[in-house]
Image 1 (cartoon, rainbow, N blue to C red):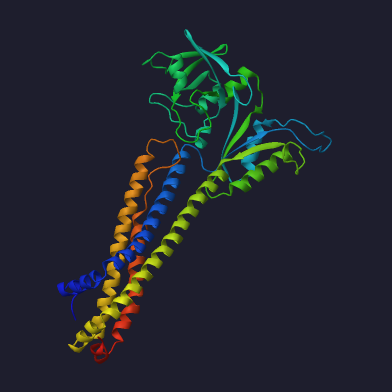
Image 2: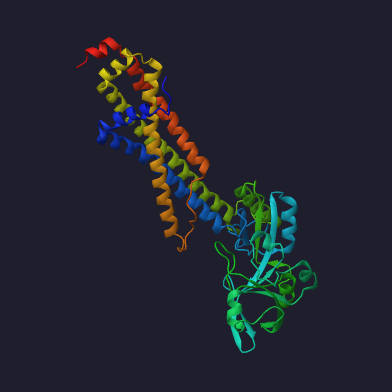
Length: 420
């Protein structure tokens, strides 16, 4: 039996393929197109996946917001239209009653949601900005990048109601001189002086705050603005394995019970579920990946079937040649191996070319989207996926090659030699 690495084996393969180059090229293109579609669509889906992960990297993917609105139904002696006001003790109740909640941060602010921004002054420079009263736990839900030398609000700031603040990059540019170190400096927010302890960076991707938001301790905000136990809204993060939609439903149901609201009243508390939105986006990306797999495999299968067809035609055209080989002592196994090797060879050539073409297109897409502000990043296909696709192609090429191989083996030498 001749070795796979025998020169004569490959000469026969080349001779068989070159007898009808046009037909072979067209058929190979079918397989090439299938693997190209698979690589291109899978890479595009991965780029979308990477892009949204990058967008959401600064916030908890299972986060949500809840705030008070007004009731739309009378209940328990109260008229409809009652304004709901979240309280600090709601935080403890939610944390104790709903175990799926990992972090919960009460927030209160001025300058957002219709309220007037606060005049902030530093020397001869001034500006109007939003002021947020926060707890340190807020950074567990929405990451805050702080420049070296600074920090965010800590527990001691809360306990002592310190007059400290964390400013943003825009505040730094508008209130301080270029190259001036703001850490330790004082700015006047309204009528009160605050010491700057940190500067937060401009967030890339999703952010709950702007680059000009100023953060002060929640306890300090309460004292200065006489907000008492009131909370503007709750920023909540559920555990990764929690059903964020159900957690949102449970939280609102609990708040209705606490504030004596009709359980069927859907307007009393507003909410936005970022986790649900993220899940939908990721579901779309996963659907695109699955679609690429289905379309790619179907196209590859069609191309491989085409290869099987040209090999059947090739076997028919080579009937006399195969008869001579059999008459000279070639075994059925050698003839079968020859045809199967041709099938696998054509399939592999087409597959490798499709992978190279797909990788080139993905590299081009990556270069074109580098500087575009969109949720898209690094469209690539994992190596195991590529190797898996090649393995599937080898298997399919082998299986489809069995048909013409069996046809070649079934030809009797005496019949083949009678063919003209």
